Length: 514
Image 1 (cartoon, rainbow, N blue to C red):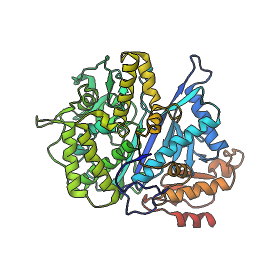
Image 2 (tube, one colour):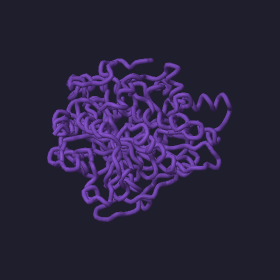
Image 3 (cartoon, rainbow, N blue to C red):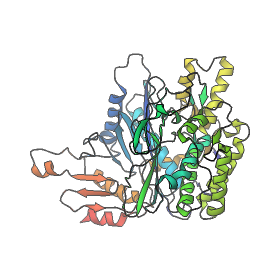
Image 4 (cartoon, rainbow, N blue to C red):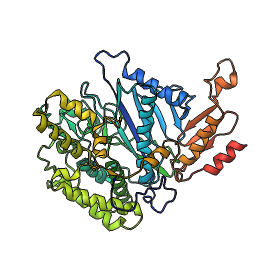
């Protein structure tokens, strides 16, 4: 396979030291998957199939342990659970969702993300459902106009300037980074209803929006852009924001904050995943250290996000609050220059990100086909354009939306992305062996290591039963309660894990041995 130059990505299965990893950062990804049923009158709903896959993973393959407690009003016992790799699989609004374990390096993150794909696809194959159902790693349903997310998580210090002024550089970066992180899509979503805060009032965006929806749009570079209606907002559903303001650190709240983003697309390309997370991590570092470039505030972030995505000429012009106009590439180059000045040389992965960030921005100024295999929207556009020319079909032909979805099919013999990989057009940043190991084993340099020990221990003890209401000790407290930052076994004191940088592995082993 083609390999990307730079030293941060190795053939070794897992990175177990800190020298190569990015500076003081914990990464995580949450991916919701679509289920595509290849039947005109299906016997089962996507939600039923999602339940079947989840049950197979936990009850038959025994890849982890199901929750025995209520995690929320919409997450009853058995809705999902933690895996031996310390990530989670669960159902969210009818979708299968995989949350990666905490990763201290891009190497582990890419392997863990790809591991989630393989875990779910393997379950589908074991169930004998691959001829009637496909798992689709994308963010839109062309038929219902629904969207489902790819959420990014970055751990920052509690001292991070989490205010509109402090986050302004991040907003600008996120609005413009889609030029290399977007997954691309055919067409456009219907105009989204949404509310945003102006002064002390909550008003409908339609009341002030001048953005014009294009129902005849051929292709755009981002899937999520049409569905974002706010720059900042706390709740996820119906008011998706560029920056989610929910304060849920899943760690010691006195030391840490978790930056939770839902503006990005799910990426098939390993390169795009690494570059998306790596560049964002560096921009967060620039903000933390007071080195973010100034004077780049965007006048209308939400509308600009959509305009960049939908720009058929790919000029990607942005109007700043100063009245100045710059291209998205120029803005990204300003962030790159700041990162090169203040971050270069601090670790191996940072230098890889800086090198590839510069290269992709250079290539974006030329023929987009230079980006095939690295940038998803460019790979997809080339495939679709090649098909259109060969078959002489228009963009509004229904087959174009079908091919759009097939780019994201996790089946290695059917997905268009995998075809590019087989042809040697895709830049691999991990290996099949690393992905195989990441399906069962957690990263060994974060608290995921300790949680993985716990899950393996519980599996070795045998299947856990649902609480028996006739036995008071089980009715009042299940055999175990596991959350990201704490767990408790029945009859033992709680075991907090507030520091995601600490493995806790020896402490967990000692706790389990008592």
